[in-house]
Length: 191
Image (cartoon, rainbow, N blue to C red; front, side, top):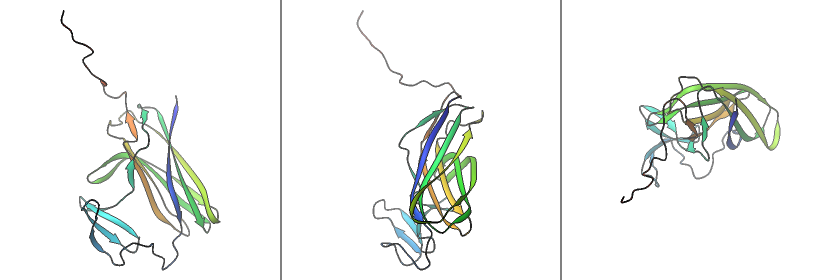
């Protein structure tokens, strides 16, 4: 059985220092209008993140992205997801590296499969690449719509800020239901 791999890069992050706040963010918590989309968004100055309301739940903006590639899988096959990020800060004991496969939609992310690892990160004074991975085996009851994935890292001692990243339509589930693709009329002519 072939092991298929999908890597996710969480970008660069570091532990937050008290009193720091990124530039170009509002100074007060509240609802704002996104000038690009016209969507109402909520800003939380404690987490330095923007959220949108969907189905009565606050969902962080910007953690789901279009997938750069699509991995084709069938029930019983394995998918290895690798997260990658740059870290600078003190040594962290037992941070949680969290992985999920599911369905991303109007009401957020419906987790169908979840996995996690505990990871200790040594002290780094300059941003240093850190990776972690988890391997899922797709069950026989996998849905054709289980095509989205996301990862996050959080917690530990001292705690790292929760950081999320995900891809929409990263997986193509095949072999469960009959499928027809590239259907066309090959030719037509007078006879």
